[in-house]
Every structure is written in C-alpha cells, then in structure tokens.
Image (cartoon, rainbow, N blue to C red; front, side, top):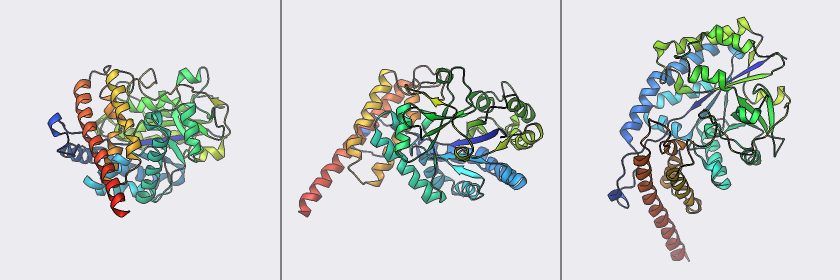
Length: 391
C-alpha cells in the first residue's frame, strides 16, 4: 500500500477578555474585549482565512479527489466569524461542501475539560458536534482534543462518546523507538484507533518555516525518505500559520500551492482524510500514555496550562462552577462558560513564557470568575423561586 498523507488544520480564535476590575464584580457582566476580538478576526480573515481558503479550493479544482484535507473549528471561532466576518464563514462552508474535507470534533471552547470533569468534557464535545451539524451540516467522526492533549483515560472517555478515531501528538517519550507514522490503538479501549502528529514535519511548516526555509520539493523528499513500511504521515498545523504567523512574503502560500504536485512528482504517496485510515489500515500496536501529554513545548506535557499555583487555583475555581452550570439553561451564561474555559487563558498565566503577563492575567480572570459565580448563584436562586411559584 502507498504511504498516505493526512493534512489537518486547526482553526481557532479565543474570546479575548477585557480588563475586568474588582469594582466591576456584580455590576458589569460583559467580559470580552469586543473591539479586539472583531479586529483580530477581520485581520486574520484578510491575511489568512480568505486567501488560504481560496488556495485550498484552487487545489481541489486542480487535483480533484487526489487532494484531501481535515479541518477542526472551535466553537469560539465559528461564533466570532458569524459575528464579525460572515463572508469568511461562508468560504469555509464552501470548502466543506467540496467532499474533499473531513470535519473534526473537539471541545466547544478549546477547553481543558478533559482534565477536569468527565461529564463537563462530554457536554463540551456534544455542544461542539451540534454546532458543526447546525453550521456546516456535518457530524464529525474523528476527535482531537485541545492542544492534542491525550492520555489512556482521555482516550477511553472519547471512545465512550462514540468516536473510533482520535488525533494526538506523536510524543517521543511515549513512542520510544517507534515511529509516529503508523496507526495505533488506545491502551484502555482497543476499539479507539489513534493517529499521531508527526512533530518534525508539522513544525517544519508551523514553527521553522522562516528560520529553516524549505521548498515543497524538499518537503516531499523528506516524506519519501521514511521507510516504505511506514503507512501514514500526519501533519497537523494551525491554519493561522498561513498568512498570519508567516506573511505571504515569506512564501508560505507558494509552499502550500506547490506541495501536492511535489508529492505526486517525487513520491508514491496519496492524500487521505483521517477517518479513511480506519478502513485502510490496521493498528501496529498500543499507544500507552498513562500520563497526559500534549503537542506543546519540548516537554510535550501540561505545564503550559496547569502546574503553577495561579493556574491551579484558576482551573479549580472554574471547574468548581460546573455543578451549577449543568443545572441552568440560560444561553448567555452557557456561552460565557464555553468562552471562559479557553486553554489560552491558562497559558497566559504560565511563568515560563516571556510573552505573558501571568499575574495580571490571573487577577483579571479571578475577578471575572467571581462575577460569573455570582450570576450562577442568582440564576439558580431564580429557578428555585419560579419552581416554588409554579407549585
């Protein structure tokens, strides 16, 4: 069997939070920097989403069924596109109508719910599936967790939700001598198949494109150099890599434009969608990850989001709210619940990154959570009062 290439794009933009002061608590319940959110979405649409979408459609028109892609949209980015850039959302819909694209499932708010509460995690995923069906008319079959976070237990939870395939990181400390270029299975539920991101090839595009420039032909030759027995190369990158992280002047769009032809000219590889691998391949062994891993940093662990005292306090305070959240039906509060779970908030509290303001982020977020908890308590009190009146 020819080697397969699985090319996946993550599309996500968080809700950026406004400065929320102690004196706002109990008085102002709007937590977002609306100007910044609108500006970012419209800028990224102009620089990345629209030109890259046009390029993807051009590749589909040129190569037909020979090119395949996968997209994963967070609920947050879909909501913001609908608000601030509806024509961009329409362009994504057109790509998905092509038949050359698989839509992946994830958490609605790009959250860390899988690390906190199984029921909260499940509700996040179900909410995301409903949104994908309502907006794109598709129900995802393949799952990928926020930042590719994975463990044996998380995989088993995903299998319990009805998925039979998950994407995660081909972490070296788990794989050891083995290659990420095979399908594996979950250690707790063998019915769940596991595809692994090839970090070297993904980072050649996402992290190293300007520091170590590479042509489409050289990239194809790297793929060709893998042993013939290796079955699938999974490339997973943020869509904002194209045009936003790397401007058009770097040649990033030209790289993608010429990549399919370079693959066809220099290798025997074909492009497939992730779920096609379930039918085409047999797992070569177990992917045993007893401790959660991620795709971030050299450690491939959870330290960007959880670990220091601020992150842990914010994380625990947030998910302590879940028992109240699950009882209510107020759509505005549910929307805020999804938005406040974004993993980026916790990353901005990490003290090992120079680009963060962790202490300011922590104080701001805890002010918001204090107000959010007061709203939850008020909503539940109101529900109880209405129930008593109805009786």
